[in-house]
Image: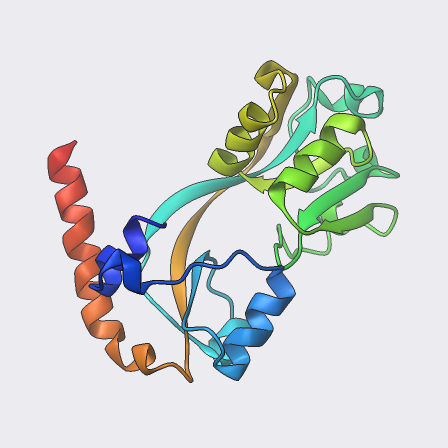
Length: 203
């Protein structure tokens, strides 16, 4: 996104200030107009109250990841993820980044009353907790968790997403309604389409 954002905003890269902040603070700052753009992110109804969303910047998978070395999830290794069989996930600990969600259905094992949820600040922190067994299942964007598994010099074969627990989602940029950039979303969307076409041509 450090390379991509200046292109779709049509500004020099040196004019863009990037910050990595806790998710709740990011949303709060956007509501106050203290930052212009958040992303990549998911579009939700709640966020529409204070953000204007661009067209899809890219598509990606978000999955429920586990560690093969965790004895508490051995019974899940050869079975497919099934929303209707929440008992398989009883007493397991799900980790998620602040602000992330996965399947709002009350029947989802992720939302079962016997499942403990732990919110973490960063994907790196979540990977460390998954590796150490402090969480049993971690909700993560696939390329990002794969990056940190390598970055932390862990064995990538020890980690994998649960079968059937992957959702393809559209990632967009959220622009604060209090930012002057909110008035330029049509031009930004045109630039997103142009850049996507260029990238496709290069491939």
